[in-house]
Image (cartoon, rainbow, N blue to C red; front, side, top):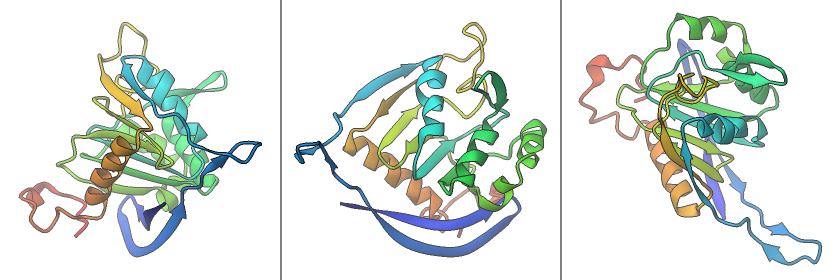
Length: 211
């Protein structure tokens, strides 16, 4: 089985249309006895602070790719060792390892996010980004194998380390069920590739046209 990955390069203020297509094999896992096994499928209900402990915590563990879809985006902080750091620093670390990181968001982030962004120059050259005002889905797709699908934006109150009494009430699912993951990949990819741009009725407010 193969998943098609469309590799492009996008940076804030610039877009380079230089797409190549690569087929990444999803390899079977073999036990010591060389018997074919697959990871056990799971669907886990995620609520409130679990968005930080169960979802955001997976970001640093990805091996090949991380795709993020969010409506709102703000300066989100996470724990890195014993220190609270911008989530953008975690994305910068992934990019330094050659991991494909893609971000779709609906509006331009605020000044605090932009200040954090400027602290990590690799984000300007390697982070692939699309801004689409119609995006309201909240997705995270880890290595095209596991997906979060839910209500939480990429903000401190939604996904970050806000305290129990200050964070949003959020809900979603985390799953490796192939049907759910494939559906999430397809929805993300259609927006990413500009499949809806030609007939879009909101071009007047689109600041980052794909097509």
